[in-house]
Length: 208
Image 1 (tube, rainbow, N blue to C red):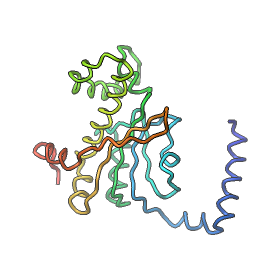
Image 2: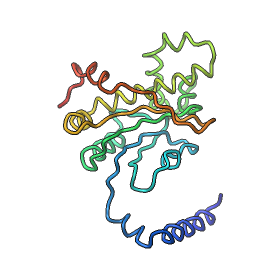
Image 3: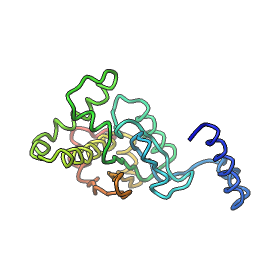
Image 4: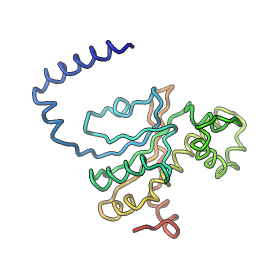
């Protein structure tokens, strides 16, 4: 795809939308009230809206390498705060995907320059779960399991935030952990037990 093709596609998209609803863009400009915050990977193969069958305005999206929620990342923390406290989303989805380059890189002993501090967060996930992961002989199975465990840990990081704890108490906000299987197109719900995690971490991480 080249730049010219993108603008041609944009014109066709506009025409298609207006053919169905002549007020589509005027209505879109009035504001947003998404039900979901989606935190996913920047991987070009993973499109949140497309795989969820969602329309513009349905999902507030944050993406980075390997769908990380790092407490020192002001971008991620600002997205969570704004979507939860201002937009009033009721569901936060952390979605990883199999065959993630970031997770794969974190499994390797290599100096990757500026990526090292970011990938260290994934390596910390490996360290937390090394007994389970080291017991998996098949490298692809180990790789996929680390993808799942990384999603789980990032869900915990979301739950640690004050905005999420407050919204859970006030309106029942929930956090979900999913994995997208690039080979099949399927979304897999890891069935993260939000309330169990919340109760386990409250002694240390209660903020509200």
